[in-house]
Image 1 (cartoon, one colour):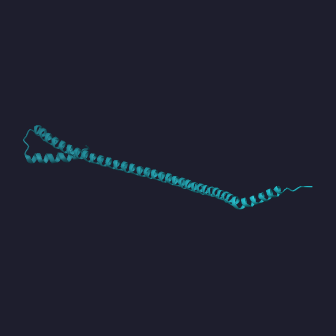
Image 2 (spheres, one colour):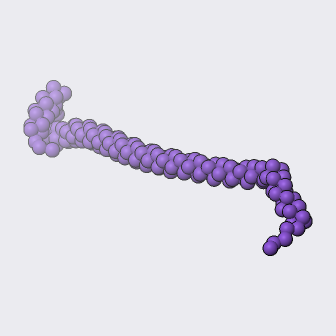
Length: 162
């Protein structure tokens, strides 16, 4: 049969006491340490996921802001081009108006000078005509006769196209 040795029973008893001692003394702190580490890792994973979501939201907000800024820049450029086109048209219209005004003034001045030249020419022709007529007739023309002749010549010369 089996022989039971007292040391064997004592060793078993010591082993059971060691297990109970370890259960109360070492197992709880080790289990708590493992539980704390597991909670710490889970908390870090949750924090990292939250930060990733925040980073994604910030990225989306940044992209939306960039798109809005691009659209505003395009609108400003379009507005500036439109204003530039309007100003160019206004400048062209003002230049055309000024050109027409200068042209009209020049035409009026030319007409005045033409009329002045025609008057001077008539006066000269009248004087020459009276002198020639006086020589042809051979008599002295009185101022009254000269005046009548000038008036008649002016009427006749006025009908001529110039």
